[in-house]
Amino acid sequence: MLFMVVERFRDGGAGAVYERARERGRMMPDGLRYVDSWVEANLSRCFQLMECDDLSLLMTWIGRWGDLIDFEVVPVVTSSEAAAVVNAVSE
Image 1 (cartoon, rainbow, N blue to C red):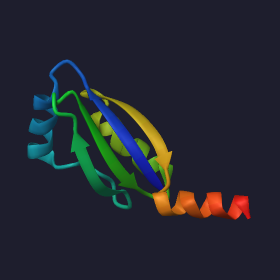
Image 2 (image 1 turned 135 degrees about the vertical axis):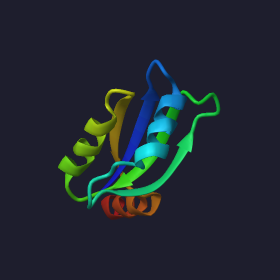
Image 3 (image 1 turned 90 degrees about the vertical axis):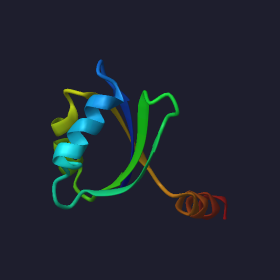
């Protein structure tokens, strides 16, 4: 399953997050896959696409960053998957 993770950097902003990432990596549990990410131009938010079959893996990862980041998690499907669902319903 795919998840769009919206990260809002807390007090220290992106600097503290990037420093930890340099020191410790992404700190993801096995089975959680990072797909790609985009950072807002003002460095206040990051949008990450993550994939896993076990939601507890995503929650474990969030727990490792929760002191620096506020998270919003949105389950998503690809555009082609959404089109297939819409086409199946309209037939």
